[in-house]
Length: 197
Image 1 (cartoon, rainbow, N blue to C red):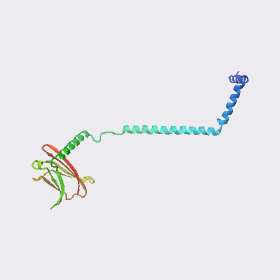
Image 2: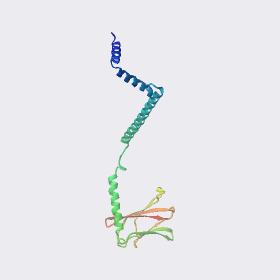
Image 3: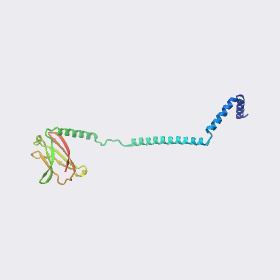
Image 4: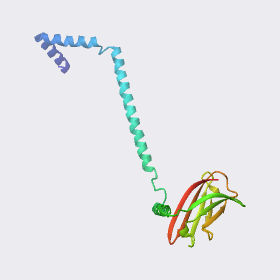
């Protein structure tokens, strides 16, 4: 005897003995037909649900893939210091700050101004009275930020009155930065300011 036939005859016998259960099953089937489980419209909404599920899966997968790509690229990025001699540059920068503080603390600061002389415009640098008799060494640099090739460097060479004159003939008009670094009694000094030619 076939098992499925045996099962159906047992189910039929059970329904005859318990008619109430058969009515519940019939009502459940009718309900399922009413809400459209086998309805084509309901199957469309099931397909829409699958489309949503696929869309969410694509969005999350794309996010994970982009994040993974960014992580890989960040590990490949070279993250060295700006310079191989960073520590030495930092020490030199601190020394420049100390030199600027010493120049600022002078009782009589270094001054400069642009004056007209017989040879044209000149930059006049006036050193402090206490430094006029001493031997000074250092450099005066004129920076032109908009044209780096025009920078000029001059040695510190004050005259007997403690003044130094630098001819500005041939310098372009505009903003320049004057940077003065000098040494007096084994102490370094630094001063910088912008001027308009």
